[in-house]
Length: 275
Ligand code: NAP
Image 1 (spheres, rainbow, N blue to C red):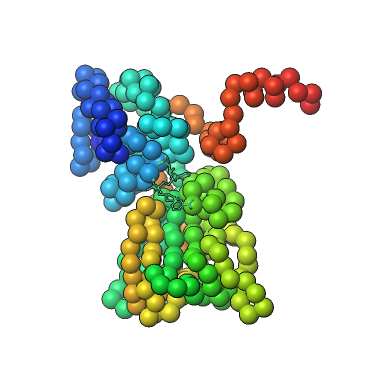
Image 2: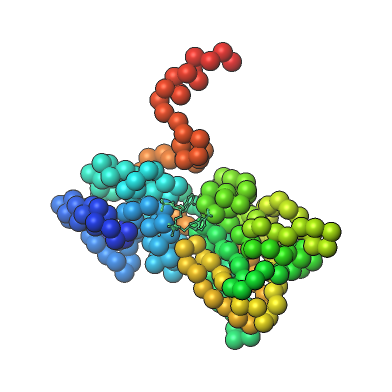
């Protein structure tokens, strides 16, 4: 079993990484940073985003596993005290693969086209002043956006930035992308839809801005600056990200535990409640 490991860089994560390597070696697993079969991230969801971008060129071939050093995350489902169990399962069993959609972002400038894959989302903001952007859906004009920015998220990213701007949470088995506004200007002159909207896989959204504008483009945790952008094309990517599951990790349980809170007493009282 060839694996690679990326940790958050803090003391606890580094210590856990050392422990993982020792246990993995004892179980005959081989560390292979160049072409791993499983990529383990130790830290949080943010660390798994970094691991994804480090191995994005091999995204169709690797399976990701996340260990969380704090609360359970959306991508990081193993707790630190479960590290020995994880190593044992990795060395002895074949995981189930769960695949989630990714977002493809093509940024067309006078100098050529740059293509990115996002696991959570793409964000567009103006470096200076209000962002002004024409949104076209499937090559038809849709709306003229004025405001702080636009978030285009994957289903698994819908619990991240998208949720903070009132986007809906989408189950990652749906192949879709969601477009949400950040503080749009809406009055008698300027008008946008005002709610987030969800496009299926075979649709695309083009965002056209003033070519003179300086743009801040976010791809997950990465921020890039662009000028002379002619258009930005967003669509659901052909490639998917794969997670190696050694036990079930239901999405709606994660949503409940992260945003609503739940413990075993809640489960007991739900059972006793008349139906
Ligand atoms: P960060 O600013 O250090 O942390 C952002 C928080 O988002 C962390 O608590 C992280 O969890 C959590 N997170 C990451 N992906 C998530 C997901 N799919 N669902 C729910 N929570 C998620 O930045 P970072 O750790 O490098 O992560 C970058 C992400 O932060 C972006 O992709 C974006 O989704 C999110 N973000 C949110 C806002 C906002 O809500 N206003 C603003 C900027 C960025 P962990 O603690 O487990 O790492």
